[in-house]
Length: 283
Image: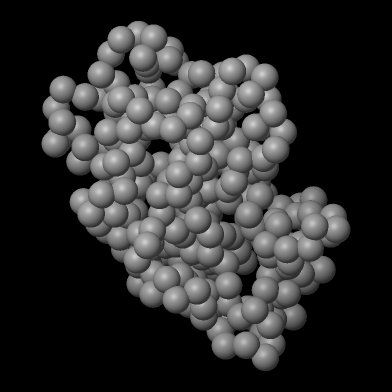
């Protein structure tokens, strides 16, 4: 069982472009999947460099990218690729988004430990989250209405799950989450709800899994092996629901931002990736 990652308190301060303010500080915003990883990086970096200050806040990938576009953060964390419309908006405002892959992640699909269902195909997941399957007894579970839990639409995790699971990577598909799905503001909120709801099912970065939730094994189809969401299975590319994690900066990193990005990608920084149950790049 992957160890529990405790959601760390967000750090807030007045949103002013840091270099304009002339301070040795960096403002980072974005993906809730990455917020604990970002905070862990920041804490170790500041221990190594006590004259510098790094502030990390979540809010979702879209929020981070919007902040980068509006020049109110230095680094946007994102669990999805930046969209063409975001790139266009950024360029209209004199911002040149620059992408750096900093880690890999597997999305765990989780149920309450009391739920006997422990494996699902990608097609079954699509049917659950679009409500074509609405009762656990249809999947060998108890006679309970399925409670669908999802990240909110501003989340890169939400976008990834919709495109890769609900729509099966089909650009022509218009599949959407069921109208009755509960859209929650953070991965931790989903984790907490699943822990207390025997009928719940949700998804989030595998670093948030604890003994209070049960990750299900996932198969690409009925003819494929069911694979658990583990670091090794993300590395060997057998787990069907995995993805890269990115940061975006205004142009190639320079100055203090480059110093921090270099730390993220260093041996020490990538060990922190592994320690927080994500997968190092190039592992």
